[in-house]
Image (cartoon, rainbow, N blue to C red; front, side, top):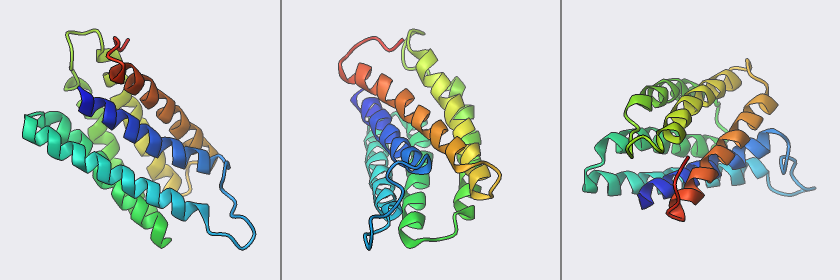
Length: 174
């Protein structure tokens, strides 16, 4: 279960950082300073690498169904981070977000870690992630305002931190 806690913390941090940037917190560079979006990009790359390390651990322990979902996120965050660092066109990232979002939402039936007591948090997260990834796609094509996506990502971060803390403290997750 430790991997699940790490996954939730990592995913929440990645969502939180870009969410706050999109709502305008820490988005403006200081005079003659570096662009904060590049820093956000590096954080997203690190998130992708940490998620990749968790995929390796899960595959070695036989948790291949969850590993597939986390691999989707790892690829997305890594590609997104590199695009931000390089200042690349984000529309291909939006295109990548579409299958990631759809597949994440489809995982709702597979996220059964306990005998029912925690299913709500994991399954609602899968559905919410699906929605947020589709919002990412809309954002990259100019159809979703930055602040709408930003607040959705901040909520995603909060929704990720809560179960991560409960799992890490060996507490019941809803």
